Length: 160
Image (cartoon, rainbow, N blue to C red; front, side, top):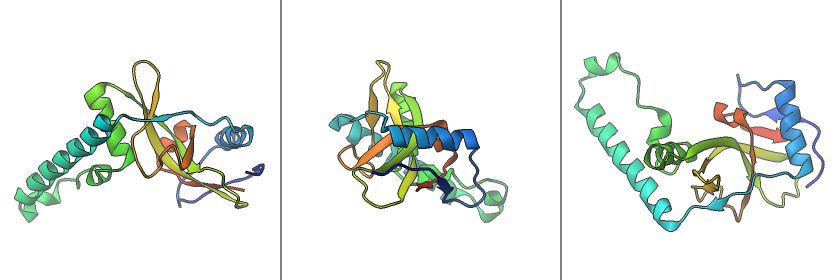
């Protein structure tokens, strides 16, 4: 990876402060990535199953409403519609195991392109302080992770 000096936001309407941009660039350039491990297979099976059950319950409740009843109700949270979404899985890990949600950005390991795409992402921290990747999409064998609270804002970035 090369040294990065600029951050560009990939989302319209999103914003980062100059300080946040500098923090992210510093983490990238110093290669101080957040170490994490893949959660055990039971957790990796249980969390998506819980998410699937939640989605089924939301869908049944939504479908039972008349069109008139739906008018005054917000559509179920978007992240709940995706059972393999990192934000869904970390929320459920928080509810089920009291694990903390940690926000930041995931990006490809060993990137050789002049630009680096950083995807907002969340991982989980257990009571012992161990960090866990809960998705296959940003698996530890493919992606690095840097912790940064702005990842909670669903902002994707590009560093160059």
